[in-house]
Image 1 (cartoon, rainbow, N blue to C red):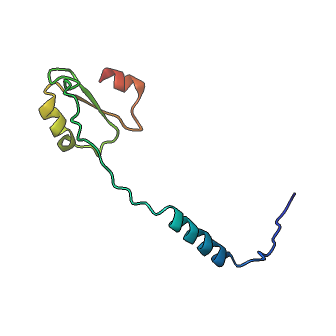
Image 2: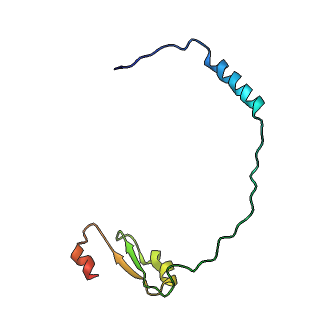
Image 3: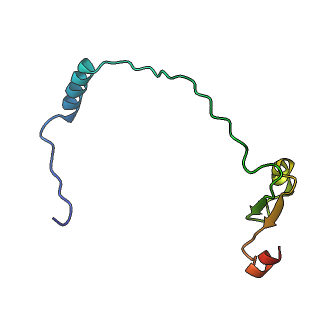
Length: 95
């Protein structure tokens, strides 16, 4: 079939929806409440460790040192590589 086809609905849709909704409410009136036991996550070592060498790649020159201060406090050996659209492979390799 190609194109658009339209036909009128022969019955009152609102009455049909209300009657079905009423039947469903009568048959399925159940109130559910969530219940669960509190589970603590397993203790695991932080990754990477604070002594690890971490490289932070910043994608624009608008990124500032202020944004990396939190990471620098956690990772004293943090190195920052700023990459812009004008950055070349050679410039990135030179670091």
